Length: 451
Image (spheres, rainbow, N blue to C red):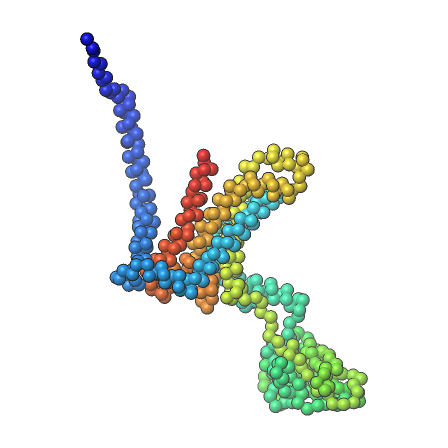
């Protein structure tokens, strides 16, 4: 006789059911609290992304399906190709410079007394909006030295070492004995022999622009030359308040000091001098013969006006410089936080073993900080791909195309005159595809660091 044993189902214990119900209730409450954020995320991120992807397959009007035509046109458009090139320059240069500067400053800040104040000072630009920063640097990069602080400094240094032209706007009065040569210099039409005097009248200079200490030229013009001497006076042929005669030195007309004057014979300069405060000059011990008096072109050269920071060549590096000013503090603070967690015993052991500070920095500090440096670098890569404000505000209209990046090109194509939102959406999708891998890398790196 066999006995069949049947196993009864195990019923949940009285405490299991309440636990499951509590778990489900907790999930429902969490979802309820997260629902507003999820709705906003869907409305502000998910929906625009999906709409842009769909819109990129339609023409400018949005009525006709064109397939991948927008993507093909995107890589044929010279402006878009230039935007891609500039974006690559941004991605390669800006994050690397910022990470390097942040690392160097974070290490150096540890060795000064007022470390907190220094960090605060460098981090303060982060509180300035990109719009305000763009306006600040647009003024700083201005070509006019009277407005742009950078060109004011450059011009000051240049003039301190190279000097400047005394009369960039001066010119000879026509028909008064001076002929302009091809190089911009002036020369007397008639030749002169020793024992003669000559008056050289100039115009084009405002009386208030005359150098300080300039004296009237009337007395100097009346002096006679010696037998072996060639004399003359360079003066401003203009009488304040009117009156006077053209081509003659009147009593109230000023001499032009610091003007270079050459004596030329047979096409060669045989003597050179500089006018005095009353505009007078003289060449002594000249042999007999015919001479021409020449005012070299250097007297009338345009004043040095600095560097064209916002020209086609330097506009992108200049904007990157403004970006560095804003984000260097961010990189320094993050790297400094990682530096504070480094094991000090390893650094002290290296010092005791005879390692110098450079060896400690390159062989211990940097390798230990590599996870932090990677996060900072990738975060900055994501940020520079989306840069828009600085480029749009700092770059003037004529060079906007030379400075454009993908974000500004997307706006210009869609709303800034192109009115082709199909092509603009394709550019937005391209920008998304470039940003997403960096974001995924950063998220995975962050999760691994948490584990």
